[in-house]
Length: 460
Image 1 (spheres, one colour):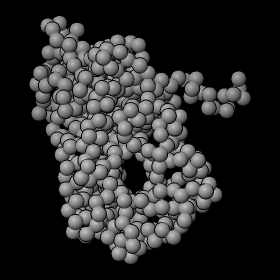
Image 2 (spheres, one colour; image 1 turned 90 degrees about the horizontal axis):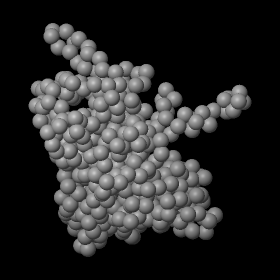
Image 3 (tube, rainbow, N blue to C red; image 1 turned 120 degrees about the vertical axis):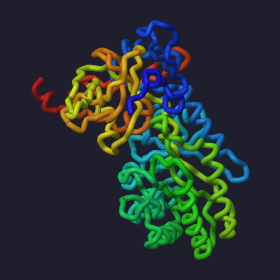
Image 4 (cartoon, rainbow, N blue to C red; image 1 turned 135 degrees about the vertical axis):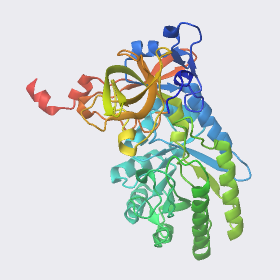
């Protein structure tokens, strides 16, 4: 059903960054949106579009909220920000200031953190195919721990650590057989997948046996990640039950108790006003009670409870600002039509709609409107029919070329997964705070793209 005019101009607090405001007043053309006290029209004029706008205060609030939620003396907690969601030097420094740990999964993410001055001993190195060069760099830097993903990687890390004369702290990533209620491609704990050691097949326990025999490795914990966009604790409950059961097997067979239980990330966020994710505090309390109950049942000492939020911190803190270009009405038959609204970005800055069928909230932000709603589809500029940003939405009938629209909750896996498809330069990221803006990642230029083309070098 069509939404009302008021709803089209509304900016639901559960979806948009906390610093998002629409200007008051009677002149609709001047009722633009500001984020962090900065008018979006000024941001577009200064930095161009497409543009990722990151609300700095909102990011800090969410990071702090997670740290306080898991800071519990009865069951110590540790929060690792999942760098894969979005990482830059600026973000690494913010995380350091908030006292969070950092999870990286490639040498590039590791070097971003290290060059930003993030303490290496608060970094966990993840990933299913860490190269020898990446492991050597991590060991040399003094990375805090490694999440091991294969038997081959056990040998690889042990060899590097032995040559360096250090003992590396490790966790075993366990595939616990829990499939979270999420898209197939982002559910990561069912058996038929590339991550981790199978619990059901006995590989996880065998991995523990091999690690404890190697003097250059020290087992500190067990790890599981069951998926993404999870709105309740049911999956975590099953995962914790199975991980604690494995921990009991480790104690009974090998004579020691694991110190850390990492239940991974996957906490959901609101992409639309109907989404209702749990608060970090509520989720943390449920996780604590689950782990406490399971450990008590097996007679185990309480471990440190670790989690890895990424999307849940940066996702809601960022929006993408686009300029409207071509507008085309398509007759669907039977008296129905759809308006295709082309913007100056698309799947090169947000692949999630095409890849996962992700749904987003979009709004006209350069002004307000009293025009009626039109069933619309926001699409990108790329030569792909699947280049869709927002598949179904209602936007004002008077939308015209040159208007600015914003898509909410694009902080996670949008700029991080951005590409140069069709030789399009990747957008800038700017942060906003108290009426001021600054560049987090500068916009790529055509010169940046062409500088990699050796064929052009030979022709010049």
